[in-house]
Image (tube, rainbow, N blue to C red):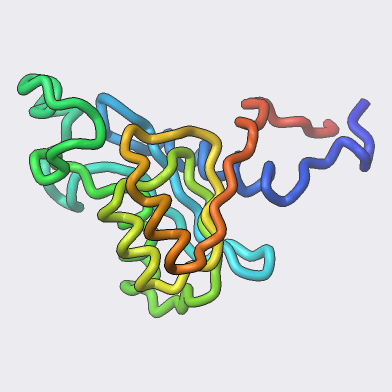
Amino acid sequence: MNTKTDRPGWDEYFMKLALLTAERSTCRRHHVGAVIVRNKRILTTGYNGAAAGTKDCLELGCLRNELNIPSGHRHEICRAIHAEQNAIIQAGLHGVNIEGAMIYCTHSPCILCAKMLVNSKITRFVTCTDYADPSFRELFKEARIEFAKIERPPLSISILD
């Protein structure tokens, strides 16, 4: 029986939401989801995929795979907009201030996303999976963005019926 003590903590809760958001991904390599949160409230979400209204990798195939480009390299070849970028874009489109917020993302950021997060004034980045590019770490340290890697939460949902 599920009891009140079985409730997930906030990091686990928001990471599960990021993992759920990742299911919308149209990338053939990584399904990445992001949730931007402030004061325990969801501000925006994003997942990796092609620009709105354009063909994606599920339809066209993955150019990075065809060219044998390893993860973490040659980001400009990819059709996808990263999950963190999409979450930031959604905030801009809908007039949501994300300054001082934190982001829960299924993967650690590439350096391009890290730069955007610094300028968005994100204060904390929480992940459960390492991306191939660790170059964000020094930038986050200099910009004083707290970085936390947590254990991947169970991919199950507990409810009382």
